[in-house]
Every structure is written in structure tokens, then in C-alpha cells.
Image 1 (cartoon, helix red, strand yellow):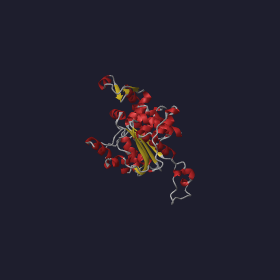
Image 2 (image 1 turned 135 degrees about the horizontal axis):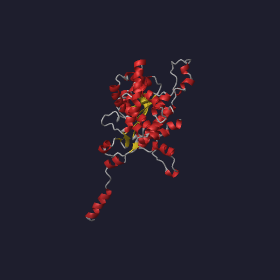
Image 3 (image 1 turned 45 degrees about the vertical axis):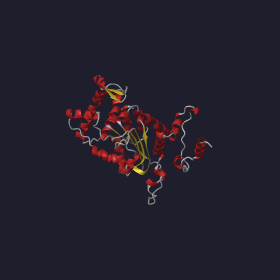
Image 4 (image 1 turned 90 degrees about the vertical axis):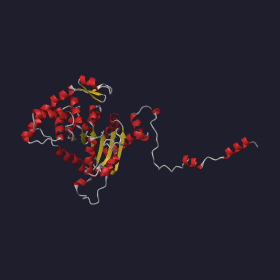
Length: 369
């Protein structure tokens, strides 16, 4: 027998190393019964956008988070106090414990959004919710308030992310991402709002009115008297709007200038923090939908801390948590603070709200109107 043939026989007799087989061929445990299988939309069925969005839940990645957000928002919308059993020590004779009363008590939905979303076309989605009384408490920034009124006075335009700041500044054009707002819009805003501030100061001095940010926004919603406005409908439907940083924007600029022309107007934030926290404390069930992060996210979550956490939470933003930012924090971090209940249903969708929010509205609120 040749050396070559012996070598070949030895090689054929060798076995795959056990460490390799045990590493690659690990035996699987049984997947729990009822676990969803991944499957996307089949375009052989034609183009059905509602059916397409319904398949997001089983598509994976952020599509599945979107699908989960749809489920949670629909639960916010459908919940009634009558869904929960009466406490054992409840007085059955109390009218508030009747089935009729309890079936009318709904989940209080807090909607928070940053100013850029009002500058964008997301404004129309928010206005729809407010006009139809589908949300119950609004929280935004100063920009998220003023941009709504400014759009009633003059339009915002589509530009480009790459337009040069130096050139835009020389032309009196302001850029918000790929949106363009002519500076004349803010001049029109000043012409409109200063006489209102004058009247508010008069009412403060002569009638003892104590203005708060929410009262200011309520009054401005009345004065704009325009059906395109979010805050016109908030005024009409008596939906409170909280803005703890009301001076951080053009509204603050106008208040600054007004303080020189007609000093004395006072806006009390303490009344509003009590009112905002009470919105959560006295609610039987709360749900939060927060588009973006920062101030609006924290203000809503912190109010819900006062009731040991929200029952439902949906966050939509693009921020990551590695830098410890409030915007980047996932719902589970809020659980550690008591701002979301430990057994709450919650999800964060990592996405641009301008892409996602109208689709969320289409699959939830617009179905229940």
C-alpha cells in the first residue's frame, strides 16, 4: 500500500471536531406557542395601504415597533373604566360606580410634540386630533405654539437641507431643516400679537387676571379665529395646552419687546405646573404619545410620575440613549423613575415623526372617529 493511499484513508476516517458540531448545531428550544411569524405584505394582492400597514407588526425591526404603537394607541382609545372591575370596597350605590358612568370614563391621552413638527405638515395631523377631541392634553414648546399662529398669517415653504445659511440670512429667509420661513412672517406675527398683549396687560391691571402659559395660548387660540389653527380648535374644545418654556421662541421675543414698550405683563408658570400635574393625578387611566424629545417628553412623563406612572406610552423619535439624553431614553428608563407604570404597555419607534405620525393616525384615531 502506498503512502499516498494510506494518508487518504486516514483523512476519510477523521470526524468533524465535536467543538464545531456542538457550536454550530445547537439544539433549539420550542418557540412559545402564539409567537408571531415574520411575514411582510404581498403585493400580489394589489395595493391596499391599510393592509400594508397592518403587516408592519410582523415585518420586523422598526416596522414591528410601529405595529406595536398602533396596538397601544388603539388600546388607549378603546379603554373605558368599565373594563376594570370595581374595587371590593367600592360603594355600589355611588352613581360614579354605575356601569353607565364608568363606561363613559376614558383614558386621558397626552400628546406632546416639538416645534419643528408644527412647522411641518404634521401640524394638520395634530389639528385633526384636536378638532375631533381625540386627545385631551397638549404639551409643546414655544415654537410649537407660535408656528401654528404664524402659518395662519403667512405660509411656510419647502426648501432644501443644503441651502447656504449666509445666503439665506442676506435674503431674510430662515431655514428649519428643508423648510423656509420668510422673516416677514415673524413681523406679521408681531403686528398681530402685540395688541393682544396690550389687552392682556389691561385685563391684568384692571380685572386682576392672572395669566399663565396655558391661559395665554387659550386666549391666542380665541383671537386667531382660524379653522386651520391647532389652538383655535383647542380653544373651541377646551383642550388645555401647556408650554412651560413659553419664552423660548418668537413668543419670548415678542414678550421681551413688549416689556420695554408696555412693562408689567406677568405670566405665572406655577399655576400651570399644578394644573398639568393634576391632569395626570386625577385621571383614572393615562396614555402618552410623544413626538420628539426634550422638554415636551419630560414634562408629560414627569406629570405622570405624580400618579406613579402612565398606563400606556408611545415615543417616536430618532435619538439614541448612549449619551444619556432624555430624548434618547427608552420607556424602560421612565419606568425606573415611576413615570411609566412597571406593567404599562409601551414602545419606542425609532423614526422621523414626519414619516410615521400620519400613518399612526391613519391606523388608530382616524379609524375610531
